[in-house]
Length: 133
Length: 125
Length: 320
Image: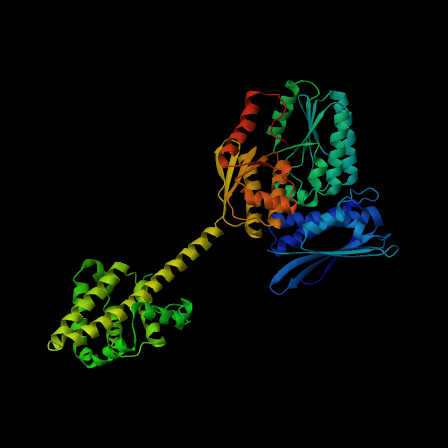
């Protein structure tokens, strides 16, 4: 199962579907119950960010490898307004609009790896990875 | 999807199902607030036993529901956060958002808590 | 411990035990074993070759006549093997040259006897018999020149004690290896979760907490809270030497997660060092109940639980 799964995100119903897919994929990869919860929560946060700030975007789920390690990579991208100050957004407590401001730094804590690219007017791209342990 | 609300004496029990949408939760809030008023309920139990994820949105909604029913004079108790869900919430920092809300293990505990509150002096909780 | 095959570590034992040339020189100096002694022993080499067989036979007859030592040499293949080793050792003693190879052979012999489980007392008893048997032959052969016999015998004593020291080193090393392996095994053990009262759990955490064990601990604690409906859990870390910042944060997160499940966690047994280290890391200890030892932790737990039972409706019960 090496192909990526691409899921359009537009409404909260899509968030639920994306979560189910991610959970199924993660379970197939052999993640523990605890790690499944972390992955599903991270995905939920990323998908919700898309719905709340960009209205539409996509989530891509990927099996990934690094040496003997297997993992799940979740990429969330949207064509929304983008983030002006990423540093600020990565601080706990930063809040825009309806969110609690806990999304990004918290999501980073849930996963093993975190990358973000975003510019005002150019949308946002976030990729997080968790390794099976 | 309508969340079923059970009446148990002067308490209301709402068993949240997994995969609730924003609309479902807003509807639940409005139903609970209405029923608390109608039945003069003194307690509202929010059962999240079947939820395998509690993200920032769900947490915020639960807090809102708790605050809304408290404004109507009922105590709110969240019941049944699963071990792995609890840990994920803490990692995300969501436990702080629930700091004003009672969270207990199960229905039995929730009932014991609410019964105690009824016996104690008014205004405590 | 019951096979007499060669050790799996294929390094020379002098390396494995860290016995350097300087160390051997130091030991020889301490025993006052010098070139003269070596020469004296070389001088009786011819004699040694003659009495080798009778001494070895008498030696093993002695061993086999005692129940305690007999059992180690029941197997005829093993017996033959050790006899050959003994014969080689025997003749090595009067070779006149006692460098690296000699030392390595002594260590190997010690290791083999240790592996078959021969107790130190038996090993020493064997050496003793052997020395006495040689003394008889030596003094009989040099009746007319006893001072020569004495010189050779004293040289032999020094050399044999050098060998005893090395053999005991191999015994000690194996014991230390065993202890390390057991410590590793203990470290791998999951933390037991004890239900000491209804609604009260105790987790005695022992050994270093590295990330994987910390995760295991969280899982065990939270699952047990659910399974036993615990309202209070005591995490005793008296047996934990250090905690790094990642693990410290993880423990605090575990405490918060337990709170979401309606259980209070009391951490007991924080050493002053750990407490200071945690504060230095920036961990907020005001968020966690701590007591100095398990006993006070139990008292606090009972107050939390008992208070609730005795005064229903009063404020201040276990936080949710």
